[in-house]
Amino acid sequence: MLVVIGIIVLLMVIVVPAFNSLKGAGDITNAAYTVKGVLEQARTYAKANNTYTWVGLYEEDGSVPSTSPATLGSGRLVMSIVASKDGAQGFRPDSAVSGTNFFDITKVVQVGKLVKIENVHLPLFASGTGTGDTFDTRPVPDSNAFTGTNDSRFGEINAATVTAPTTNSKFPFQYPVGNPTPPTQYAFKKALQFSPRGECRINSTFDVRRIVEVGLLQTRANATPVPSGGAGTSAVTFAGNIVAVQITGFGSNVKIYRR
Image (cartoon, rainbow, N blue to C red):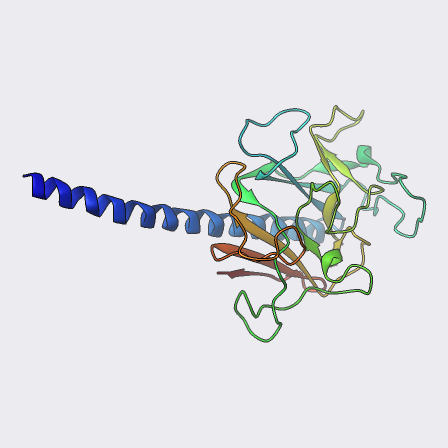
């Protein structure tokens, strides 16, 4: 009997971590498909209603219940879709006035419910090589001379030193919306915009980018895994169980790359 019990204990020690790993893999895959669904919903609404929509991304502390106003942190991704009521763009993209908000929050309407994804963090992964169709060889997001690929990626979106996309406080929106403007729970300063033609633009410049990427990393509440390389940079690497969701600028086609 003691031998049998010993074998059972040994098997539990071996098998339980494997089950936990499988659950984590499933969680991050589900998160990726949830993000994909939100992006596709926003694009479909924009085209069907001949208007502009925006998808905001915010990351809060996943170790505590949601607060109002929200608590910055890691571990819970919050996404919201709003749409222009009158079909207007809602801001002046040519403005160079720093810190001026031209986004009129009273002229947008909430589309669907607020989406919250638990146990996920948005880091900046090292870019793929652009030579294949796997995570490590995935297409490279658009680059420029000043920030490299960061203007085309969502990651570390609440960092004190914002790395991606470029800080742009002129065009935020909030949750909830309304007229008069209600108290803010979430202030979305990182957003994608979809036009009535279905084009996707990132709010670093609101230019059409060939590819925009959202990186997803599995967490436990607000605890993120230790990177295998590039810690504290915009090219961090992890051993596994990571996902990159990419969306094209003109076709707004969404593709998931997982490792």
